[in-house]
Length: 70
Image (cartoon, rainbow, N blue to C red; front, side, top):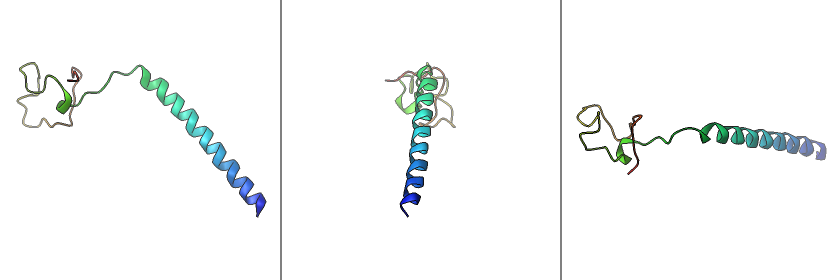
């Protein structure tokens, strides 16, 4: 029974190492990405500078490439 625990612990440790490696890779990928600003958080939300302000389909959880956080 002790051997089983050792095997289980080895598997858990291996998986934890894989998770940490993936988190590091993800951090590197996301580092160069621009911030995504949702319409509800955008300074342009109710201005004439927002191309979607009059759109009936615009929802607050949408975003655009020109969003600026308020």
